[in-house]
Length: 270
Ligand code: ATR
Image 1 (spheres, rainbow, N blue to C red):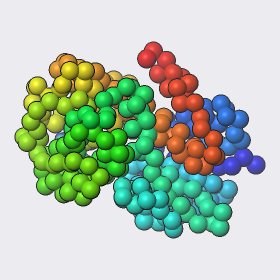
Image 2: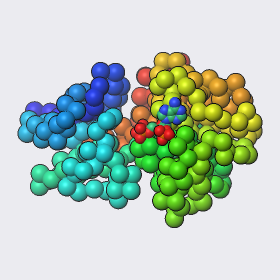
Image 3: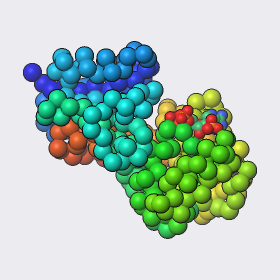
Image 4: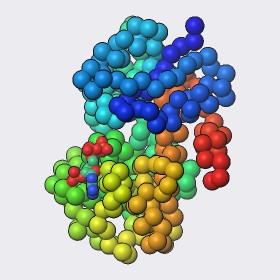
């Protein structure tokens, strides 16, 4: 029997992960199945334990279960502990549940693929929720000149900046405190879901700046449309999804898939 993997979420109907992992498995000749499972909102742990009882070897975890997956893990990677979230579960050799997160490294890999300015760059991150917490460590590891976190609730951004300051120059504040220009602006708010854009100054982007939205869809998000009109290059989060999936695949199978081939398959026109 093939090893079973899945992604847990709620809702999960539109997930691209089964398609991505099927492509990785085909490409690397790994015998595995990967499905999308809608876990009950009040019993994520039960869904995971039922899955491993029926041959499950590992899983991806998406909204809204990443924090709960962190709590139920018997063993946590240091980066998952710092992020306070788990997007990859691995069943250990002794039946223990190991939790890791590949979101942050997935973002940085995609930014490198997009030739984004990182080292010595001025980076602005919008939002201070779980999604942003998960990317700060690898972003600061790329040694930007400075990283500002701006959020609707300014105090949350300030708190997050203090928490990560040991990894590099990090400041936090409200959108009205954003001054100067930035080489890279990453939208990690959920404002795009409602078609909204955080209120930002018109002269936000430095020359050759990249605007990145961690969300993705068939149409550009409101933030990316606005950024394009204000002179930035733009990229959405589909590449991050592929790269984080590849890192999870590596954790499970110890094989690195070719992400470029899968990117082309998902979005042939780009
Ligand atoms: P996630 O896990 O996706 O990060 P979250 O922890 O609920 O979800 O965080 C959502 C983020 O989007 C927060 O930074 C939130 O700002 P607040 O902390 O002020 O709530 C931000 N956000 C949501 N809707 C927004 C909007 N319409 N405009 C600006 N920011 C928004």
